[in-house]
Length: 266
Image 1 (cartoon, helix red, strand yellow):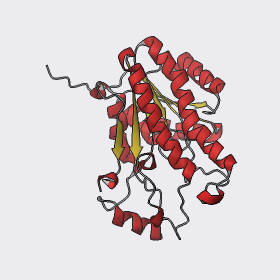
Image 2 (cartoon, rainbow, N blue to C red):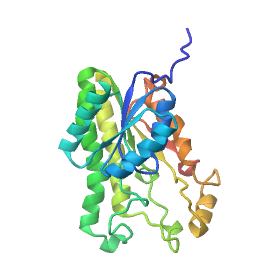
Image 3 (cartoon, rainbow, N blue to C red):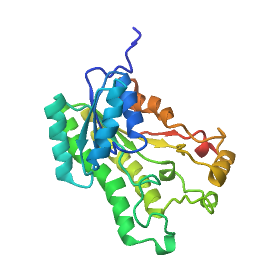
Image 4 (tube, rainbow, N blue to C red):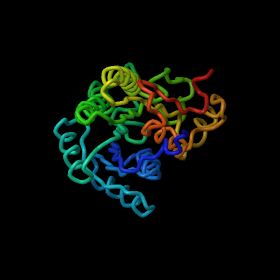
């Protein structure tokens, strides 16, 4: 018999970190459109609540919470709040990270003089934060015997940045960002094989370049190097998020799903 409800998320609860950032609201809209309830979390309480309010106005079942992803205690508090609010947690989207939209003080410095404090800060959020989220929320999922974890990786966790597209654009990709995202994919594979038989699926999602009002030299260079001839629109990740979260991906384990317009195909 054909299952017409493969993507149905009714009754399921998702935690999404980096709630005040560019992509978290898109993930929330995607999951709530298929019936999930979402706990949107960020270290910036004010911005996270503002994002949650906008989503609620669009009809999404979203609640805001505070979480410092570099703190295990903060993750434990987030788990408790989610359970107190919704009674369960089925999906974790580890989305928080330092990016070109949320930079550390020395984010734009070159490798030769990249500050150690910025290396540590980026690693702590992008990689250690993902580790802690998997440890706290994933351990709960293991006990309940089910769950889907989606770690947000990056194109530059799969390949090196193309260093030639950045000069003169005001945009950079620091070493710590790339290395941290390679680590996220490695962590994903480790946990996927550890927890597969316990009912917890762990996968990663790799976005390509997401258009965020880019213009000028960078945009022109990017278009020429991407088979699709353009950057991704942020809503183009929605299908991948729903797929990995849902029963449609019941046998998808340890996979890094790349949504990049073909960038890594040549």
